Length: 498
Image 1 (cartoon, rainbow, N blue to C red):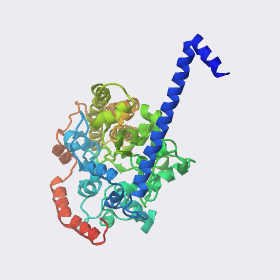
Image 2: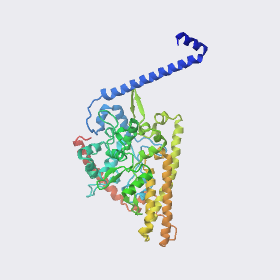
Image 3: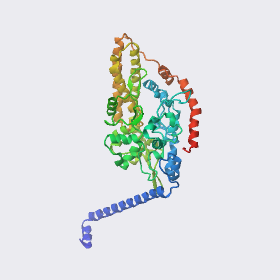
Image 4: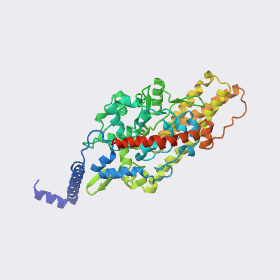
């Protein structure tokens, strides 16, 4: 068609002209967007490769060294030390959870969590909190042994992959916790997730790779978007310490739902501990954040952990991720509102609505589950037999596994509210079934009066009830902090590990 013909056609039908104009404008816009993206990417590459001040080789755990090359990311990572945020229910502050919910002391009777359990803080505190918690005991004080194996350090520091390389993975896992105290000294940081040469995301913990392998999956083929969650899934998952060597293992072989992992544990005959009151063989959930996230709306639509917890920032022509790793509610404009057009108030209220309903159910479960454990103790004290108690113990194990699976996951009430409510309701149902069965057992052993609960209304009363000598535990820990930890730090400094 000649130009004159096109001109005549436009005169006869103006819509053709407007269509051509629109197509040209869209093309110009797309070309401009492409040019901007190329410019932005070149700026990022220039930042990464042209501004390096140090050549980082191998497994460099010292975050300050990485900070010389990547000051923007490092400066935001330093903010993980901040404790200045509190939403309606959660935040980055120190909270004594046992003091707020003393029923949990009874739920974990016989396990180290009954001594001490606080809300998680930022990544900057991973080493400090690990050293100071009563759950790790006071090894070296008055001849005390380690409560935990070296495996417990695994998710706390970029020194872990370094030690795995130096002494071997199996040897690392089975080392006493205190034997690694002057080695595992840098908090979670750069080397946990990044290759120092390319800055590509990388998996540094073998347990995740091994879990994929057992399912017939090749983690090396994961997409970049998948990796933006998988680097988090190295730690924010359910796991257990397998065998005498305490080998860190993910129970995903049969699937990653609550029931799938419960079946796995039954098949391998695993128990974390025997409950001090009920004598039930217990499971302790860790923090199945990744598993629950994948079941929720955002996970099912292909979002990654980093999309919401590490929003992009811009400085000049350089775009980079915010490494403060915070609740998205801290800055809704850079997180939720990049996709959602609701107001900040409305978006926060959606989250709080989910949280309110699930926490209401949680607060219903915990006292009933604690009561079931205490009733089981009463049944044993009144002569109940193992045959009579067998089904009750199974119900208690299953009820607490479901409750713990829900509460141990950071953000489960938002990541997967429907699944979390289902799991919590299952826990409540099994707790009440256990109570009914125990009432029959107590009646059969002559206990016809209404069961009366002991006073466990405070953390101190609950800990005294289960037999903890908190005065001695705290005194020993204070000596550990004053004597042992300074020795670890001095050794690490002398050997240039910090």
